[in-house]
Amino acid sequence: MTVTLGIDLGTRCAQTAVFLEDRGVLPVPNRWGGFKTPSVVSWSKDGWRAGEEAAREEIRNPRSTWWDIKRKVASPWRARCGSRSLPAEDLLVPLLTMLREDGEVFLGTLLSRCVLTVPSSFTFAARSALDAAARKGGFSSVRIVNEPVAAALAFGYPGRSLILDWGAGTVDLAVVEQEGRAWQVLESDGLTFPGGRDLDCALAELLLGKIDPFPFGENTPEERILLREAEEVKIALSGCNSFEWHPPAGLKGNSATVTRGEFEALIAPLLEDVLSRTRSLWREWRPSRLLLIGGSSRIPLVRKLTEERVARPGHLSLSPDEAVAAGAALCGSGGEGRLLLDVLSSNLGIYSAEGRQVILLEKGRPIPARAERKFHAVGQGAFPLRIFQGGGPGAKILSRVNVPEGRRGEEITLSFSVDSSGLLSVLLDRPSGAISLPLLQVDGERENAGTGGEELSLLERRFARLSPSLSSGMEERGASLFRTAGLLSRGDRYPEALRELDRMLGEMERIVG
Image 1 (cartoon, rainbow, N blue to C red):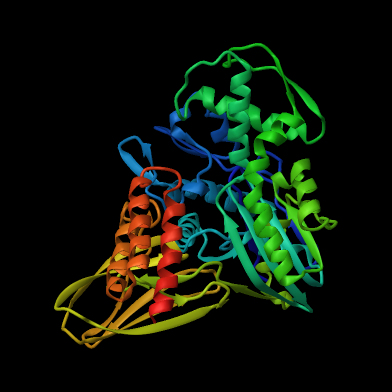
Image 2: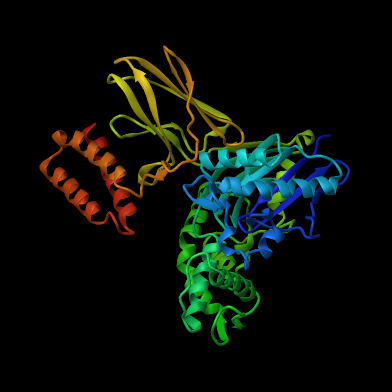
């Protein structure tokens, strides 16, 4: 039997596991004898370091040592490595190579297959980039699975479960139903904020206010020390009501007391969106149990508010830290007859020539999935095509493609295919031949449609088309909202204004038919 390495590539730490027929699921130790490998890499003229070796480089070489890499995958962010500028996914290659090598030493055999777990909120671009990084790290076969789905597979509880995975980088939710040897995902959702790292940042600000303030820049040793201290204080406050914090060398100031009450008051507002989404899924699907995993699930306030507003968290048959890696290993053991049926966690579509969002694959659609849409060219020559993920003003632009010249009236077929790993491919078919569009190249063109003026322009075009059919009162209402959105264009409430405009235009379009 070919062994598959299950990888939980966490924002702070990575863990791996394998499934062996005669021994079941086994956690894989790293070269330092532990089971958690820091998700950190460091570069110097001597080459790459990863894991514990890279973590030790942090103080000596802070500007060439990187944590939180996974949160930057498939983004415009770049790391400066000498004369080179590298994307986050390239920085993950040394870490993935190390995880593979440690697995090979543990098993005494070469490994070429892996199952990687990712947050439900990972975009198609991020999945594609991570797949490429794993292949550069020496794996010839890569499968990608959502983290809470892998955890459900590991726990193996029959019936319907709601999994809340609160990790360092993201919060993930999934409703999974098990019947026999089949696991079916009914719905999955994810948030990129607030991960456990965001809670650390909030606590770091509190700690800084308790000592003599001093300036330090981003990605400096002082900032790293403060964030590490905040994480330790957060962990300590899960087991006690107050903690005496002594600033370490590198941070000036006297010792200070931090209470659990202070920490809870600080993070309570950050928990609201997570609790609201969890409650909504619980009411919609009525599962048998709620399972909390991930480091932040240990925070007493998280468990208390979850029990008060949703349901009492169920007992876990595995450590919440090990469940995702164990599930990934089980997912790779196809010979055991396990069937995992996953779904899309967000909509996928294109913008029409008029700026309207056209959804081709809907959230909740079982994967693998395929959809196609036929269009007719409305003009002569090349035309732009924008592909998005999500919906509304918060939709994420995956890529911009300039489709080669076409003739007016020419029929064009656009096909979207998503495989079982959530990897996307797009095919443009026209009389002159089929073209596979390079949609998931990572570059500076990728953006969030809700962060700039482009989405406002699209909404204005929709409004202009409706204007001749609107009453004077409706037209004035729309014009007023557009003026307000323009004033908010540089503020935090801009996305909220865009959502309100999108909702209003939807109502108007429904009324005028």
